[in-house]
Image 1 (cartoon, rainbow, N blue to C red):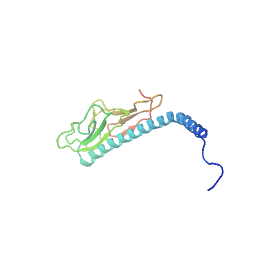
Image 2 (cartoon, rainbow, N blue to C red):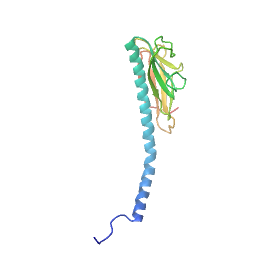
Image 3 (cartoon, rainbow, N blue to C red):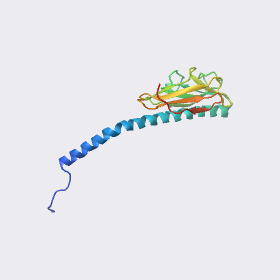
Image 4 (cartoon, one colour):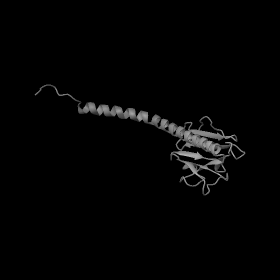
Length: 172
């Protein structure tokens, strides 16, 4: 049996360590929230661009139109893009999901994001990969809790079918 001084921490030392950690966590948490919001926006933007690119490539590959629309359930189009969006082979190019048309992909959106699609609700690409609608369309993605940060992105889809993300901007 060994005799000598006891090793370990005293209760006072442990309480001081916990207090210092609590102060450091309180300082770091707000900036961590900003990083999380920024990452959510980047993820949603990348998912949307990937879905638009998928629809365009499906249209070219199959030589038939393909479309993207807002969807909350993954089975039908809805005006609300914040629930998610859907890519399908729109064989007749009418912008609605009909019997026999193949659903290609459904992406469920993050509930901490607000997504606004084009006014007519559907983005359709023709068999050459161009947009069927003559006017440019846009999708706006933004964090629900923006604060004073630039947490909004506009995706512009030109008539040639190219989707491009504009620089981040302050939420409107």
